[in-house]
Length: 386
Image (tube, rainbow, N blue to C red; front, side, top):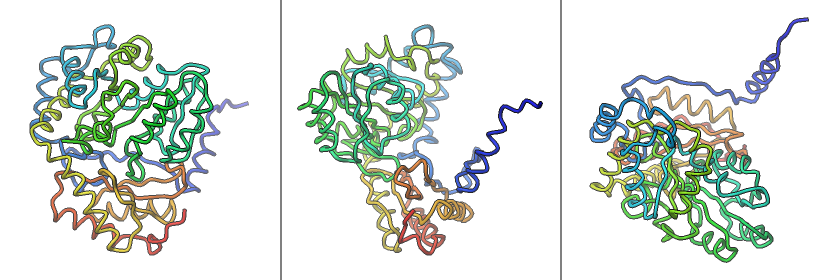
């Protein structure tokens, strides 16, 4: 009898292919070949000379890797400086840097809860939040998207430790969460509010200080923010911001901090360089929002169904998963890279193209992107139904 423990994978692959859900890696070259509206480089800093020089300088000084976990040899003076700068820039008491934004969400949700506690999570939250809820062993209530009233119901009914968690800007449609209202719901219920500001940092708030700062919540006793360094800051890594006692608790209890190798010095240096640049050029945040608004205006004028952006993400509806894949491929063939979101990445079952605005896009590039997306659109794109 043959031993074939992975034969089931072939059947899974056939099902994915039949559903039009096959994903593939596309290695890109060092030099851009396409007009990029697919990445999360909202401020156009990944290749900025100052940011690249800061990353290279950190690697030359500190080496290629962190050499160990943050509690062994992986914490450097560079990491400590980045934590101080992030906390000060975003308006929080303290910060903790981790290897990714994903790890930051897992750390926060697992360390601030326990069996018997409650997490209330928006239905549109990112996969890293979903996984953090699953790993936390807390009771989790998933509630209607963007509804403070829906958050209030399970929070009022629960006795004991509780927190609410939401993206500040949702990665699929680019809409913003009602943070002030959610914070009031949490205050009334005696619960903490965790805000994933991955898509808000660098785009929202005064000079890009993020959605909690824009909502007047930064530094609040019951407010914790997570973020990534890989989007507006053009680097890599993640962070948790909040009261100092919360950060110290994570240092001592968060497994994705304790047992993970520290962030590479080049990434920390690049993020610091980007923060310094954003301080010097705060107008980049407003420019990213302007580009998003221009993309939305052009796409809707062309008859496409798009979601009005609250930050730098512009979502355009597609009639089906297959149509979305073909549409993205046609854009690529025409020289424009766009994102393609299909089930199960979109829980509402509506496939989309996702365009990400960049502060360094010119008016000509915006016009080219709009014209290309419109020209390649499926005939039924204006009436997306699945």
